[in-house]
Image (tube, rainbow, N blue to C red):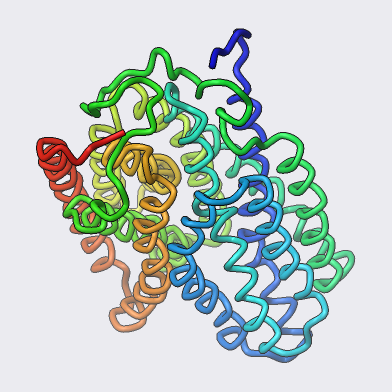
Length: 421
């Protein structure tokens, strides 16, 4: 198979999957919080009672992830993504018909099942299929586009809720997501480069910066059964758990700033800097993954995270220092979508990537259940986030150790001849 044109179809795939993931995350998942006040006020449901559906979604995500990885590997990507957005966005649209918290609890199941594909595994898996070169850049673009679409969707959703009411807003967003994603998936996404009769982008000139003993373009790596018995996989799961736990502190940053004596206006401006940090950080980390490899990029990102947290701890209420710290923290948060998938590729190869990545992502799902409320409980008990910030630094150090452990174990697997085509 040869790619005769200078333009490679992988770039069309990147645009399409970025749009699909961006809509699933930005227009559906990330707008969910905007509805809570309107729904609770209108239906007389307690905030805690309604928001319990987020926890249900997280539990369903954790249970369904391994199954989703196998389905993604087995079936046509176009059909999987189309079915996934119908489940996710369809459930979102149906929220508009509900009048009791039980409606949200029940619909959280299909919402999460579809969301597993769209928001967790589709982007990394599709990019991993299509890119041998510039894999990091592709992941960076995916993350940046998702952040940009999320930034656009937030004010649009707020306006819909304010002008048309929360019921209509749910329905409009859900239906619009389906009407955009299904045609994009069916027309632009292809099952694999081989199905289109071409090699992945950069296959003939791919390098092996992480020491992977494979020929360019070969679907080589560690099989799933071997990976499940390896120290590297569990180190990667811990990395996923901790990086998600670290990033989830962003939800508490406004409260932290207000507790430090700043007003809500400053907190809002700082969170704008945080989103900018994610956008720029996504491109920086994607570039570094390609140039330095995932191992060194992960260590760089963790060091940057330690700097950001230290600045918050010792800023002495300097608005400039705090703003810079939160911007750097945005870069660290973008690790979830870039460094973590790249680590999975470099540690285990492409042979069983979909299943291995979805298994490692269990750490992400578990963190979503535990970390966010844990920070709130710590604040309630101590009246401060200081101990949480010190805990974040410890998590960063543990993550660095996990990276070294994972790559050391990878070398042992290769030496034992377990990296195969």
